[in-house]
Image (cartoon, rainbow, N blue to C red):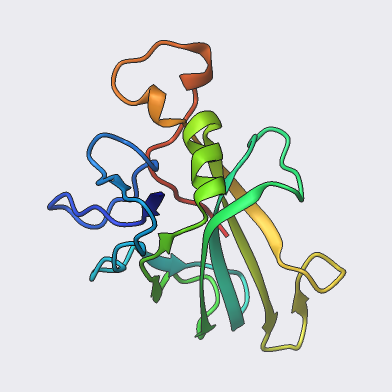
Length: 172
C-alpha cells in the first residue's frame, strides 16, 4: 500500500510538499498499517478579516483537476481549525493545522498519477451574527492550489508540470 504524509521540516519551518516528491518519505508495504502521524504541525496559520467572529478554516488535499474541480474528486486528507478572531482588520495567529496521514490508497494512487489540488475553505459567524458561508450553509472555497504529480518533481518541462505548487497559502 502507498501512504501520503503531511509534514517535512526544512529548517525554516514546516513545509508541505507534493505527495510523492523525492524529499518526502514514501511507504510501500503489503497490508501493514500507515505510519504514525508526524509529530510536528503541518502548517501555522494567521487570519486577517474585516470583522471579528468565530471561524473554521480547512485545508483539503484532493486528487483531481484544479481547473475543473468535481464533487467526485477524492480526498487524501482534510484538516480544520476553529477559533475566535478577536480584532477586525488585524493579522492574528490562528491554531496550526495538524499533521495527517492518508491511507486512502485508491486516492493516493490517483494523485500519484494525475496530481491534484489543495482547497482552502472558511465558514463562520461574525460578532454581529452575520453568517460567513456560501449562502446554503456550506463553507466558502476561497483558494485552490495546484499540486503536480510526482513525475513533475525536479526539472521536468512537461506541459502538465507548469503552474504547480510545492506548498499552499491563501488570503481570506
